[in-house]
Length: 433
Image (cartoon, rainbow, N blue to C red; front, side, top):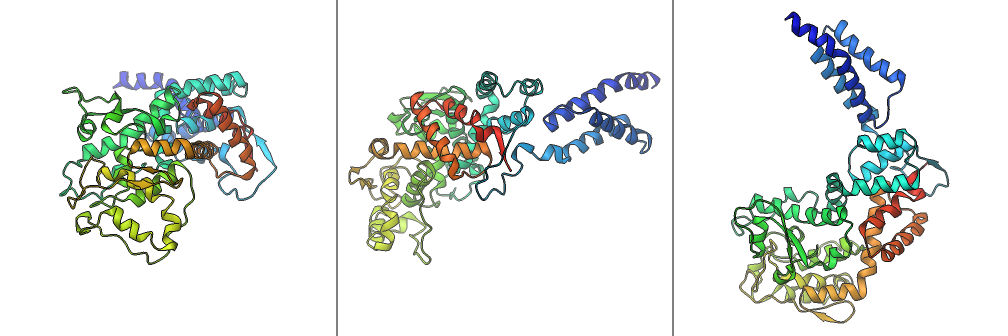
């Protein structure tokens, strides 16, 4: 016992030093001399006055850090949450505050040791250092967090793993494993773009997909037997997949459960991907039947056409119904189909807002490329900038959005060019008062 106690006494200084290092990570900056002394004093009080063991005192000291406002609150965001009007007053971020803002932007987590060292040494505001750190962080596996947190909220799939509206008696293939794979698909796809500096236009036009075994089976793709990994499948268009638009996660979450919904699917494209503002529907709008098989002789396309006969309905529905009808050959859980649940041939022919007709994913992509590509780019720039700044955008941010779109086009639409435009901007490196 005496040997154990002697070993503890000898190890105590290194344990206290480790607590100081942990506190610096929690607070995302080096501790001051006063803070170091307060930490050690708190530990000694727990040991001497409260008569806690060494392990208990260390544990309580760690808890005190994790409930501290210095851990919970980010000083680089101070003043932005309640931002309602333009303000000309800006305060430059310190290097340590810039490190925190950069890390939470790219990793949704605290800075690592290398980033903190650059900040503590006062180098992070140097353009070359800032860009080098940004590129390093984008290549890091922790950049996956941007695909989850930014894209998950932008595209609306962040909580899909809790999605329970599918009738599993009617769709037994929708297992927990398939639901998890559906959630993971856009994460893997976007993580690849983020970490490998891919083109953001792949979101719309890619001819490849990432799948695991459950998802490959759902898509009718061959998959290596016994392999539990994710693989990249080229020429995914052969299976009517590729890019974000035909992913099952979006097709499923925008279906009521017992039928598809061209309205919700089309709305998701024009609202989430293209950033178009659609007003809320008027009250007392009659719902379509919940079960697709109960439509009688009508198809969903027929039912929607009747709905659009009312001028007040057509004003909005003409903007997205046609886009949603393109997906009618995908069932309620994103499965390929040629007949609907009422055993009627699906109807995918639709007239886009530009007056041209289309009936498949290729036609939709043509329409987007010819008429809506710039909308997608601007919407992505705005969403990403707001995420990076941690606030809603202001009129004064429009020039930066314009610069982001131009730099994106000048750099073959590489994702990294968007990030670099943001982190080198005055908006990112200052805090509004």
